[in-house]
Amino acid sequence: MFEHFFQCPYCWEEISMLLDTSVRQQTYIEDCEVCCNPIELTPEFQDHELVGFSANDIEQ
Image (spheres, rainbow, N blue to C red):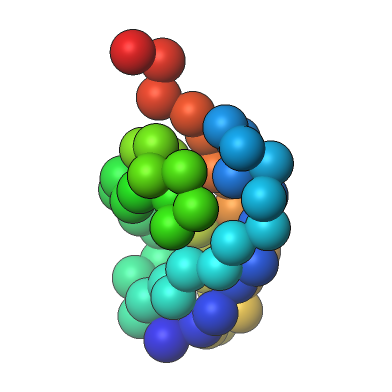
């Protein structure tokens, strides 16, 4: 597991998520631990190193 810090696209607070380095590319939804809004996370790993990451709001 890899801890990654980023800014919430809703409340702009810095939060962290644990990411699974064994999956090369994935997209999933997690709630912000501060404002509880859903965030679409898309991490990408190569050789267990984070090479790409996006955290987007889910337009509802």
